[in-house]
Length: 252
Image: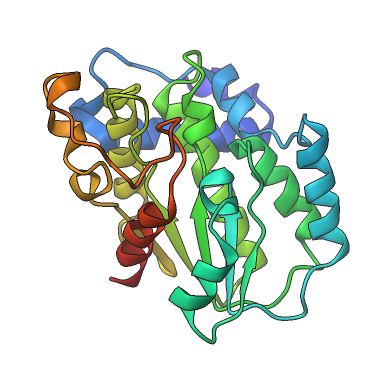
């Protein structure tokens, strides 16, 4: 293993070592996953521009017009990008929130944006990070590689905002039965919680899945699942009620 690591470039070596530590921390959550595919780690941790025009335009707009100051910065994908502005203003009150999340983003895209924000980012006291659900949609991405990507984004955000606290939000349930890749999602979150424990300026936020899914994640059949107004019709994005649940978790 030492000989293999010595041949790898430093960024990949660091990500692979992080994934191995994460696998050990996650313990039995990843039964059968003995090692993390280094190429999957590269996919999640090599910065890549947004590969869809509206995402790239949104990134250019954010980079061209960052505010001078923001009490709170949101970084991630559509789960944060779609948070209604009027709801944010009501929930966070007088604190200025800069929503720099971009719909469709995966960890590698968030890293690309953060790399370009370096040196021009507004001062901030708090960063809220929620990313990884789009990585999870791809079966070829194992939880350990997604975790490596999320951790890389978190580390970059902490470096850009050296005086801010970072709230790392767990990847929430999704899918028509709220169980899309659920074992992998739970393993991913367990590993992130272990990785975040004890780190300064970093707080791991676990959303109450029972509350968020209206109990639907416990149902044994489609007929038993309650209607849940927290989720949009695609069972992946949130309605306004869902953002109330997210905010309550962040406010704890």
